[in-house]
Image 1 (cartoon, rainbow, N blue to C red):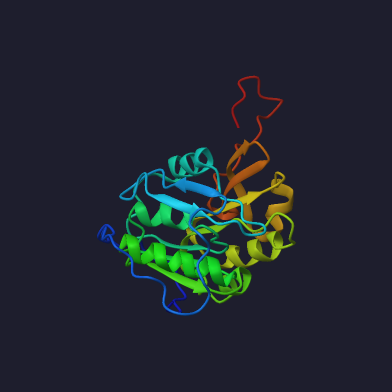
Image 2 (image 1 turned 90 degrees about the vertical axis):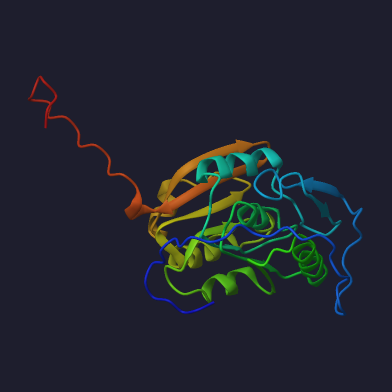
Length: 237
């Protein structure tokens, strides 16, 4: 990814092509069996209803369909020109939802070799030229991004780890002034914990054991209205 220091514009970009027929992964780790723990579907965009295998891997917990649908209702269905990174990709569902809606660049970062191989097979099957699979550490990938270079950062790490704060710190630096961070966590994050990172809650949803947050730079949030002057009976300030 190029090292741009200024916040990116949202250029127009063509919609992703939909080619079928993926070649078998070449060498490296074997992809998890397609049966695995089940499957999910992309819920919107060009690849709507495309099935994604959910491998039986420790800590793998795909974002529920309802939560993904809500997230992209919040963001809007047209992400043409956006640059995005899915830092803990797993099945790739979140990042592929963005690419399905026209994102110009989507990086899927996954530390598990078998899952990364599976993601590459899915990318080839879809003909997803805007998608790049990167095997590695999600926090390190976020830290390597140019400041202000991303329109959307997707953070959904294993709930058992301690990756939330370092991932948010890196993501806060990487997003554009008008960008968004999606955070999926086992508990709600309050503004008091986010403000030191320069972030604020834009939207929040609880679905079962999952708390879904859409965050924005605090500077991009509307200022709170000034309190009325108690000495002025009209309430004007």
